[in-house]
Image 1 (cartoon, rainbow, N blue to C red):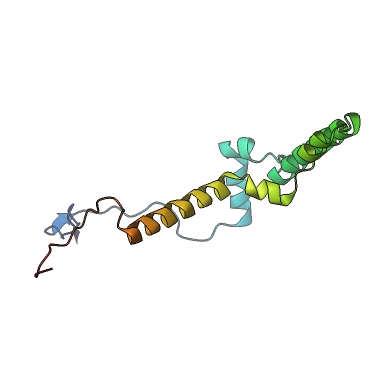
Image 2 (cartoon, helix red, strand yellow):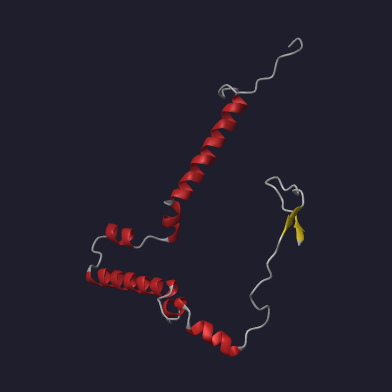
Length: 140
């Protein structure tokens, strides 16, 4: 015979209840190696999950794609030489051109221009209506 209390939904202990407990039928001991082997051999999961699979890693897949792209760009550059100066400059874009034409750089430029315009118009008193106007007090 024993008394058991549990917690309700709010975490408050419930009143004690008289219960009968049955002793566990399992053994609370360390398994011997032969018992472990017997359990493993009879396991249904062993057949499914004990297979060794060597899958391609993401590193290997990405390296293959990089090599394919490098090979295809090498073929197109070798097979099609640039004839006019305009074609040469388009093919040989420098780091400056890539940075200058990136969407991030354009967004930064727009933000800087907007803030400068707001600042200048605010100094000149031509800025739009502001949402927080102060109440004029005093004579002037």
